[in-house]
Image (cartoon, rainbow, N blue to C red; front, side):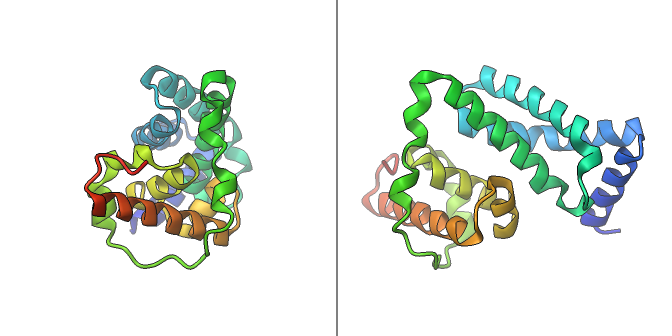
Length: 183
């Protein structure tokens, strides 16, 4: 059985009320969701709180998930929403999410880059605008497909591609200049 089929089966069992399947499902996704949330909120304690709230929502809303194959993207969407809400609640961090407008003029065609390069430069992602940073983290570090990233962020696929291209271009420029971070 493929990992995708195993995940879909576990989700279906959890949806039918199997507590062990639900516990295993949440435990398996806890670490990647925490890393994703931590990257967005920038604070370990807040990330833990957001993770707890996200896992609670995942468990509570699991019955409404129509296609178990989309569980990962769906769970990341919930965690992303909760993380962004938490950041926005912290007034000092509101400015971190005001860079979305500058991404509007980036073309949707994303050049091909080596994913290993992005993984090797994960520490440099913190200097990127948050809108591009989240797309890069979800696609390269969490290994979600671009349609899954679009689903998580509730954005058109073209917008996800443009943010990916923008983020990769900024990352490449920073690496070319030998900067510690691409800001």
